[in-house]
Image (tube, rainbow over all chains, first blue to last red; front, side, top):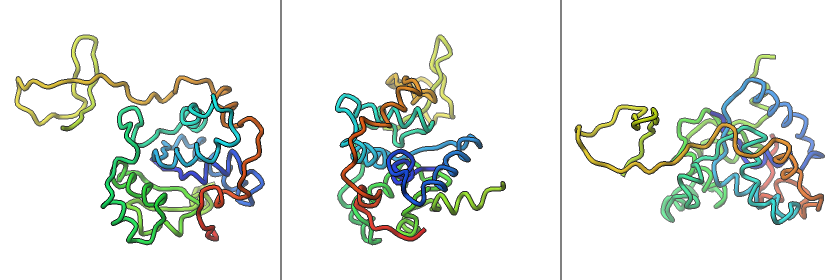
Length: 151
Length: 73
């Protein structure tokens, strides 16, 4: 499974004038074509909801997580139905994670990966430099991942 | 407490992996269906939701929206 960070989805949906959009879109298209299992940690999904909310009708905001699952074919980790408590971590665990010089948001994502999907193959994020060495799985940007694929 | 995946064969719940419990152990099965590979929403509806209502977002860049510094990829 490859995990997507919030920035990958947000560039695809809301920041299409971003210079990284073409590579970002090509990466997502390749992932879909290769039927690579995709996931997002719950924290990243909530980040997407928070960013999309100002541009989404109030009645539609609760449907954003399922819409992401439907469009991108991804799983939310941990499953919010089975693990409805947000983050499922502790104050001390987050403090320990932030000793690697991470923001709170990034630390929550790193902890959720460590706790719920440490066997994931990869985290795709445009913020890769900030995550490398601080999460338990490999980290690449969409551009780096796409460049590694056989045409 | 631990969780195990089970499959309902129409009559009984069968563990999907070996279970380290003595035969006869009484336990409780909380019935929960895994996330479906095909969530209960049409793709058209999902696209409509993700496209939003046309209100511009108040952030110029994705990094600004996520309150993250931008690193050169």
